[in-house]
Length: 133
Ligand SMILES: Nc1ncnc2c1ncn2[C@@H]1O[C@H](COP(=O)(O)OP(=O)(O)OP(=O)(O)O)[C@@H](O)[C@H]1O
Image 1 (tube, protein in one colour):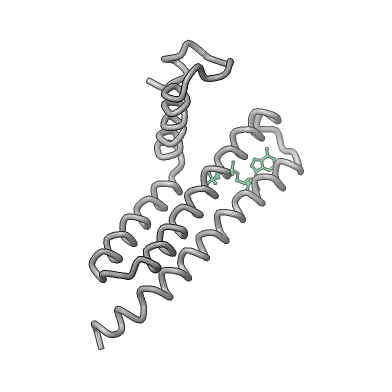
Image 2: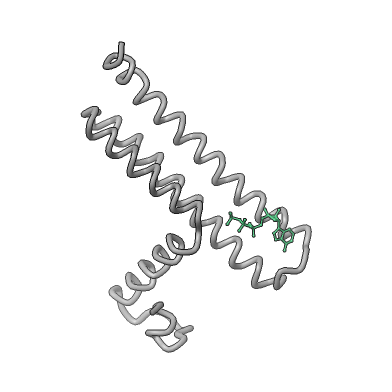
């Protein structure tokens, strides 16, 4: 059951912090359920965290890995918001500005993913080379 149904189609402001948190968590669950790409991002994040723990990377390297993970997650969330809002506005009719909005949002996910891959390569490759040399 989603928060929308639990809160009887609430459209007014949240009454308290717990309610706001529940809606935010509901949003996270929806992205994980409905966005296939988000599940790939989550899998990649788990692999990176596992590898980082195995290779005992430094605190500074952990910060870069975590930044890379959350940049991709944030971009995917904004991409999902863009899709939902634009689909609502045009109701699936072709519209050039919707194409622009969706393509730019998808581009944001792509460049954040490239950033994450670069961070992963810079941190993990030298350590893996030492181990497998
Ligand atoms: N209403 C529209 N008007 C114009 N172009 C559209 C419209 N809907 C989708 N597109 C085009 O189709 C592409 C894919 O659309 P959309 O992002 O909705 O699909 P998706 O495969 O579900 O994306 P994602 O994998 O990010 O969830 C967009 O990047 C855009 O170029």
